[in-house]
Image 1: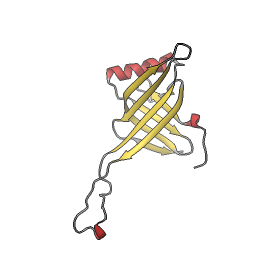
Image 2: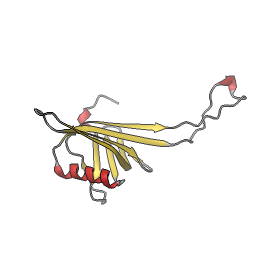
Image 3: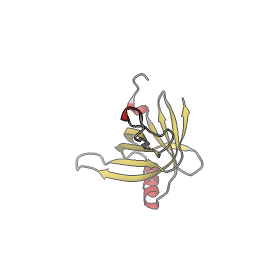
Image 4: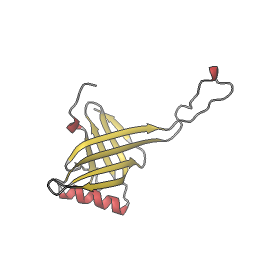
Length: 137
């Protein structure tokens, strides 16, 4: 993968449950992390006493985070509503020259901050809450 603009990594939210995704407003920094837990099946018979892992086992998960400024009242209000109502809507993460990850995520935290002589800012974190799909682009 060649160098890409960080601004091209987008987090989109299904605002109405109708699979029409809108970019979450004002994000300046975004990140997605994929994880897979391992299942250790090492035994006394493992060759050279090297650890052995069971392929295809364990729990897979993804975390998304973003930070930015308030710009669009609609998506900001919807993100707050999702958090306080404990909803698990679908999100899309567009990773340039890689693909689109889509599926249900739970907003696990929203942090708001601001100084007296600057803009109000926020950070948002989400955790996967079901099966995710991947589409190469």
